[in-house]
Amino acid sequence: MKTKIKNAFSSRVNAIGLPILALCWISFFWGTTWIASKEGVKHMPALQLVAIRQFLGGFLYISYFLFKKTPWPKGKQWKTIIILSFLNFVLSNALSTWGVKYISSGLGAIIGACVPLWIVIISFFQGERLSKFSILGLIISFSGVCIIFYDHLSDFLIPDFKFGIIISIISTLTWAFGTLYTKQKAASFNPYFSLGIQMFLSSILVFAYTGAAGISVPLHEIPAISWWSIAYLVIFGSVLTFIAFIYALQHLPASISSVYSYINPIIAVLLGAIIFGETLNAAIAIGGSVTLFGLYLVNYALRKGRIKE
Image 1 (tube, helix red, strand yellow):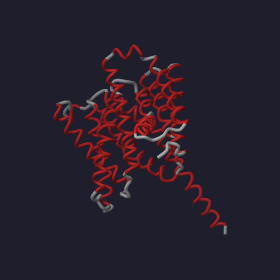
Image 2 (tube, rainbow, N blue to C red):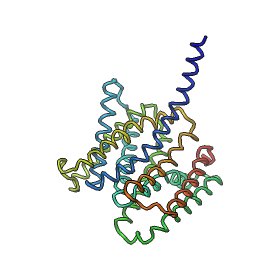
Image 3 (cartoon, one colour):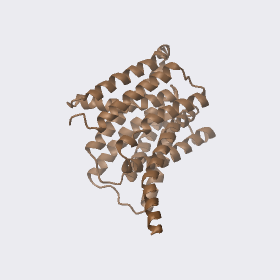
Image 4 (tube, rainbow, N blue to C red):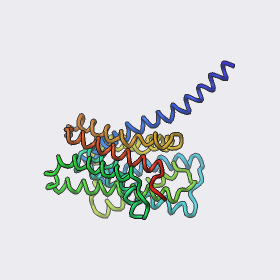
């Protein structure tokens, strides 16, 4: 009897504890990837770093599933995978990484957290009705962004800073389109295997672009610090944390599993200030908090289905 109770308790702890542990992992390590990206792109072309990272990450995923003799995608599944590869990795991941070459990692993370705002805006232009919480969240988030950028107004005169902001915003827009496309074209194909194929395909496209544009450097000229950054991004950003992310989505309510999106920017801002000496003042602290609160309201509306379909 005691053994049965012990086993039942252990199963209950695992059922609750492991998904929460996965969520804590996501919340911390995806925040740190902004720091790793910032360090890596200091010493090499950003898009080349992206290509190498996604090639290695995709190769590891695909190798594992080939070893497990997992069936390849079929028919229309390939179309979905290719489109998501382009939206989520060729554009979103690549542009957000490129962006932190010109702006702070904390600012890049805050911009990256704004994906739900684009989802609401895109949904509105597709004819869907917005709830009061969605509208209020948009207004509050926009106010928070204004507070943050008030401290950076003079920086917009710097072409590199302006370019970094623009491509970072575009990266959030493409991720939002990818999220909506996933929702519309949800497939039964293994999400982990799909992720690996998306990474691998995107790396080929980014490699092709960097080669044609002549912006890559020979591998032996890439310094050790960038290789360490790539290794960290592959292991913690592209493999382990994506596994934890999908696991958390499968085992936790959306209201809990989305918590990571509010913690990632905080981790990135704090570590950016500690490691790189990036600015951490009242404008960023207050503006970031206001923006995240607005994002919470938007996510709340999305979870409750108050954007009428």
